Image (cartoon, rainbow, N blue to C red; front, side, top):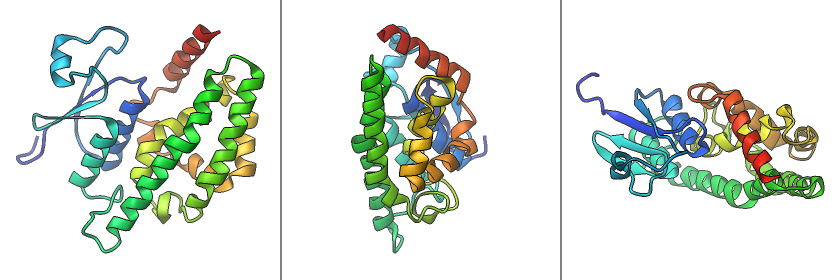
Length: 233
């Protein structure tokens, strides 16, 4: 490692969408790092609890300093390594762009994603259909207007921004489940018809190498979701 290059170690798990967020950030920034897989199916080791007393992933060591929580880590990386992910607050339009990104991410996580989770966890076809209809409706109402200038990414950016970093791991899961029979295929056609800006943006996002490359393993992720869902029946 070159002199002056920070030593970065990511504590992660390949099935965690929260860890996936940090991988997306690191891969988009093309920052070298090492990773350690934390077995989240077992009680955490004393060694890992020293890294993160909460026992959660991800955690990041940056030259020996520990950061936890995926939003905190991804934002720190975007600020530390200047790129199109996030403009500095000292830029003329920096504060406004950062505020718009924060609003978009908050809107997705709090006003749209909960309906998807409701549908995914539903035990009846009727409840699942209701949850998906609410998800599509919320995407159309809350997100489609915010993506009217996507080109192809948030805010007219030609490359992913922090908006994509913090939503991509959830978007790609939403779009692959119908392909594998875990949700109705009508979800995708409904999104295309009712939330065209969102759907166009999402399809660009899920094919970007930072999102569908690296730690992403569709086969294992689908198998894990299938096991979880079968356990709910």
